[in-house]
Image (cartoon, rainbow, N blue to C red; front, side, top):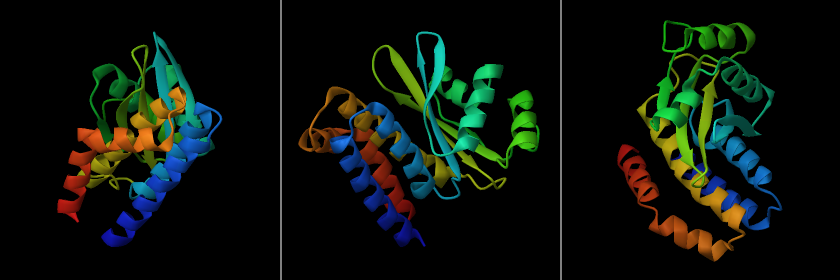
Length: 196
């Protein structure tokens, strides 16, 4: 199974690079990143990308309506793993939303209103005035683990480069140079190779 996941990840990253190169808007890139998360991260069933510009949060990409619903709840409650990933600048993982956790009001609503039972959020620096988070959701409790977090970090590092490339209209060669020099991606790839 790990070799299949690596092959899928390689195809997904190649496809994402094509999306960046061919996209007309950043919104297309954001949506593609969210869909890619459901392929690259084991047990990720839904994904979203939320950004904060100044003090306003907004969802800029989702894989499906469930992810959009959870982001809407976080924005309404101003509490949750995504907002904490952005504000505390650290990854957030909650493997089982059905038991006591750091966001009890959000968790109760998510469990009652969606099939989601676990969440990961990883910060995504976009530019000096915007910061975001890639949010991954699993329908199974305890599905997310350290490997899930590593893969989410790898995708978030790629997403940072991809969103900036799309925003600045860089060509595919510039994107490849940015990816090659990104130490976070290199470290994450190395950790994944050792783990598998």
